[in-house]
Structure formats: structure tokens, C-alpha cells
Length: 166
Image (cartoon, rainbow, N blue to C red; front, top):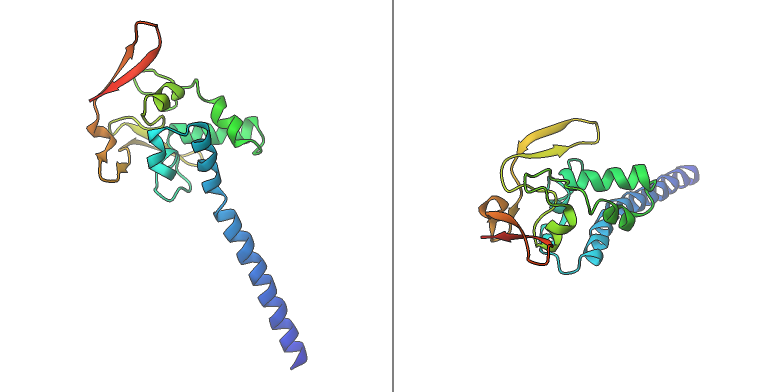
């Protein structure tokens, strides 16, 4: 009976440790979004939460162009150690590859979504190198989907680029 109790106690201890490890790693990802919000505190795009970068509302494998650029920079340039630098590093890219050709920072500052095009022409990238073409943007709670906006790039009199959406 003593040996059986010790074996069961040991297994229970290992299971508790594993559960703690997996729950910690599962809750680490929202920290990335918190970092993003600290860089862009007034950005409307924060309403998308995980779908700012991911195809699914709960995150996971499957990123839009912006999310995939952040991910690639995080691992390839910063060795998985500096998410804030990774986000800033891609500000000058046009990650969603839309025809307005505006960079991520301009889209964020213009209250748009740097990883999503306003039509069913988005590409979703996966870890294994596969991708899905012609995907719709996410739905916004109470506001419909992003394709309901009609946006135009403009250049102000001072020469700065911006976007007007109606």
C-alpha cells in the first residue's frame, strides 16, 4: 500500500507540474497583444484582439500578413526574445499587400487594420509553410466585417500620408 501511494502521489505531482507548465504557456500569448497595445495605445485595431494577427479569434496557427511578419521577425531577427522590437521592426512594411501600398504604421495610425484587406483577398499563413488564399477579414463585434469600409489613401498638404474611410 505504501509503494502504491508513493507512485500515485508522484504521478499526481508530475501531472500538476505539467498542467502548470501548459497553462502558463497558453496564457503567454495575450502578453504579445498587451505589448502591441502599449506601443499603439489609441489604435482602433486593438478591438480585434487576437485577430489583429491571427485568422481565428482565439489565436493559434494561422496568421494574416501582419501577424506572420511579426512572427517571422520575432523568431528570425530577434531569436524569440523581443516582441516590442519585432513589432516596431515591421512598421514600414505593407504586410497586408493591399493596393493602397500604405505601410503598417500609417494604417495603424489611421485606425485601420494592418493585416487585413477590406475584401476576400487576404492570405493566411501557417507554420508548416502552407497558406490559404482569398480569405475574408474578421467580423467586428457589432460593426459588421471590415469589408463594409471604403477607404482611400490621401496625402495631406503637409505631405504626410493618411487614409479616409467612409
